Length: 469
Image 1: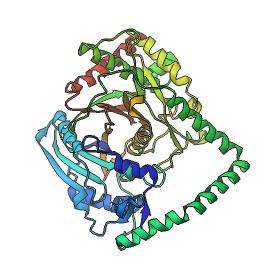
Image 2: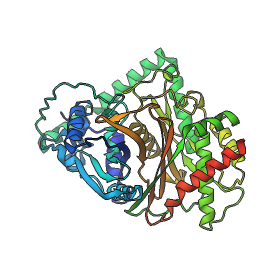
Image 3: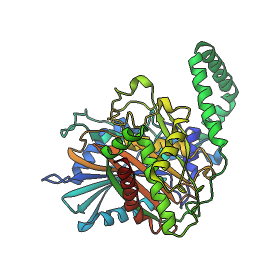
Image 4: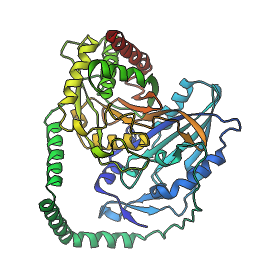
């Protein structure tokens, strides 16, 4: 089946370069079962779920002379063993060695002659654990009809559900002439198509004032975001190299709930305040000038859902919208509680705050796949100039009960967010099973000291907890 890439997907496909590959990554830590998790079992698990994510068996084909956007076509030579690979740490492998491996794998661009994803089964990890690292190109994931692979391979029970036999017959690959003729045909038909689109939009507008109001609200959000101007100068904004460093942190979600209740704010506000405190101390450790007015501007995309669905969200539910939101983190403020208050005030004034997936619903939204939500957040961020913000922070809800991959207990889950142009740090925060997991991706050259951040995040949280007593 031949499907043309959307304008957004095509831009992701062409936006990347060797320094900023446009993929979304995730790292899952699993409890190694007594019999182990064999490579063959993982292959079978993924293969049975591929009918739910058909893009994962398709590759991108360019149209001759750039007459039109590229197309998705079935990969007639699809080989799942090329995409799912084995790796091993020198046993007993440490977390630091695992993070170094993730950084190296994440530095490599995906092979554009094949479907744009990879998965690694990492063995040899200490404490009777194994890991699965995946990366999928941003062009693959739109959150509505195309989900990240982690969305479909995780189960709520240890025994995976039954799936019917998958008989996949790839379509014949189109010739260059056929693609060129299709592009010319679309070009000729475009005026009529555009007129029909306008006519339909007018009909919908006059029959649904709610949709008109919603469109106006979205436009206003984007306009206000653009009006913020350029971000403050920061050491976070410099040339991005091809090499990465990756590190993680894990905190009890209950600590954030206590602070939410104590200061009448949202868990999302507390998360941002903790990150702000950590970044402040990181700047000070480097001898960077920090004044009372110093700020770091973060893009924090917010996932928006119909209000009635907050308490009934289930696995596979479509994402209604991801809204851009810029917030200035007050790194110049020395008082942790004042930092939290300033951030809470800023987020409260955000026009979509009433319908955001924030701390008040983070526990009830079990079943949403964090990798897909992180990918959607990145998609929103890349639609704005990187000059408008200093770093990307994605914060998404995950299941608040035990999940399984290939019948194996999922212990921890971390996002590995991509670095954007001239942004040497990105942070992905995932709530899962009573914990908050921070995935911190950084440029190896510009942030050789990124390993400090986990301890600084802990110190920042402890400072708030002490103030709340």
